[in-house]
Length: 100
Ligand code: FES
Image (cartoon, rainbow, N blue to C red; front, side, top):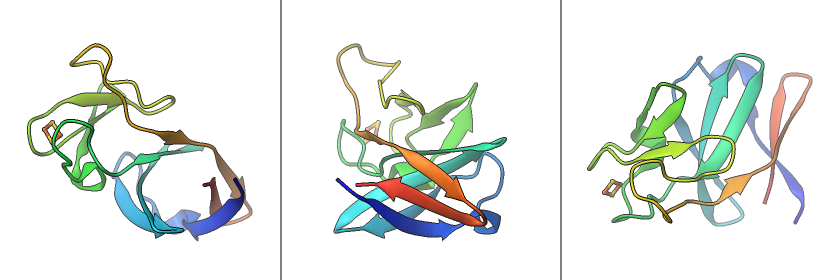
C-alpha cells in the first residue's frame, strides 16, 4: 500500500462524486466539507459506477439500483453484509492523495 496522487482538491465539488483510476483501480472520490473520501467505484451489487452516483444523507448512492454506501468505511446500508473497499485519503496542500 502506498499513497498516490489522485487529483487536485479544487477539482472536487462538495458532495459531487468523481471517478479516478489509480494503479489500475477505479475509485470514487467525494469531498464532504474539509474531508475527502475514497471508495471503490465498482458497486458490490452489479458493478454500477459509484463515481457517477450521488450523495443522500451523507451516503453514496449507486446510480443503477440505488444501494447506499457509507463513505467512511464502504459499508452498504441497503443490504446487510455488502460493502465496497474504502481507502485512506490525505489532503496535501491542494492535492488529494489516496492509499492504494
Ligand atoms: S449495481 Fe449498484 S445497486 Fe445495483
